[in-house]
Length: 247
Ligand SMILES: [Zn+2]
Image (cartoon, rainbow, N blue to C red; front, top):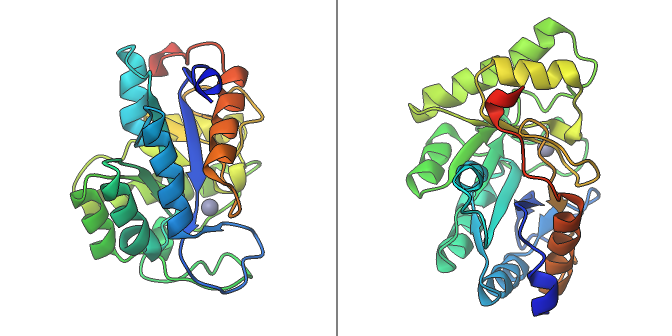
């Protein structure tokens, strides 16, 4: 195991969605049981790895101090992030980034035809930040941004940042493309809106600071599966990330 872990020197990032013990159908395979998350984080800790928010990870990369850190991200902003994931993260002394679909705060994941679950209210989003976690934007409506026109891009990228900054009374540096759908225009819009980083939903492309790759965590993944995903990710990303100002 230690031979595998020694390869995890690049900033690897795990992607979760809902953390819940619910037995409701999960057609998109995005619900991980809290006991399973607990086992994932316990193994990371045993291997000397610490989960941190995406922005903390990138700050550490800039300082050359990212060794031993793993990014933890949770997409969509489900209420179970606050009620269920945050206590597990706290137990292990880890932080994370939650990407909130800003236009759905206090509503549900109605962009999806599957089972509906609550998205955090503004108060819950503030509670997440108060607990030491990062809140990032996941657009207003969970829109696909590849091929989107400039008006749509502005509404999804700019308005969601403004809304979350208004709720938090703090800067929102992180962005996440719904469905991992992006193109050059979308990445440019994210950069122009003032975000410092953005991530996609897979580790199939090397990425830069505005298209950061992540490893999907499946509902059935054991801790060993997660570590194997991290190791593969590290192999794919050999070069350091270019600085934000570099392009
Ligand atoms: Zn999403």
